[in-house]
Length: 387
Image 1: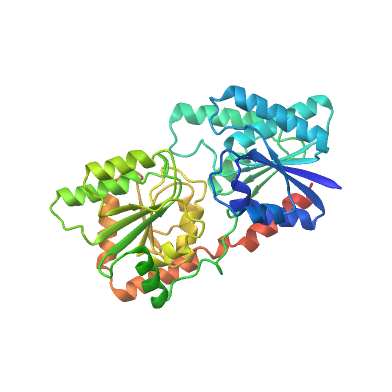
Image 2: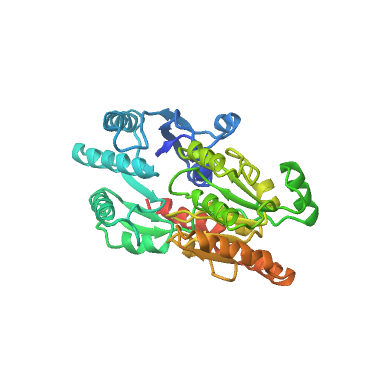
């Protein structure tokens, strides 16, 4: 039987993003193995799903930080043990450190004369247009080096695809672009008026409030801080902001700092932290606007899900959001750190006529049709078939 190992850093990644690939592989009669750090559960998942998935799990000590050198060297040795013990033929790696260790394992196998095909899905290179100069150079050099041990490199946006085509992969290596991990437009549907009202009642949002929503890990990159600063700016200008309610769904390293900032700015009635949500749809159905101010994005599934749900988006202009955002058609684009721009477009959308708003909601759905799961699935079937 053919055997494949899927490698990521955080344990919940498989259930959040990779189950379609697992089904493709199982249909192709692969025995699917999965290695990650079970102590890093970034995404919640149902334990029953784990039992029913038909996947063989391996817990390794891989860490997200490259500074945790000792743990990651140990994780590389654990990966090699799995490859040898289980006679793995294909390794599909994801996430930055997963991508590094997976391809280092490929290098070791090459030296040992072991046949191991390596697929790496880059969910957003850390070098990109606008990235800090020195940092971008280091990351580009690292990716160029690791490409030599990569058979297939999968990217999720045009900028990364163009850059990946410049790398020298293993002989016969190929580069693909997929429209993200795939959007389920039948799942993320616009709210009816009844659903809109019920969702807001459940979340305690009054009829007069404008509900602004952000979804994603609460960290420096996701940049929820800029919206909080914007609310403070409005408050300091003497404007009444009692009708504005900003909800943040997610957990992360910056949450405590942001909570302290909200308290310091006396915005407790305007900003609510909702924790990580397994099902984000009730929040999208209740939302008037979706705010996506990330400094960088590989693509940004959270924004795609919002657009599919007919929610207008105000997003930071980066390589990921440029794939689907159309300024003035399905929302607006801002510079990631331009506080006044976010406030300007929030105000502009409030003043928009009902007919204009309805048209933009239609545009939202149309703008994400090409990111549906079926298109991602078609390409991934080609990727695995080419092995």
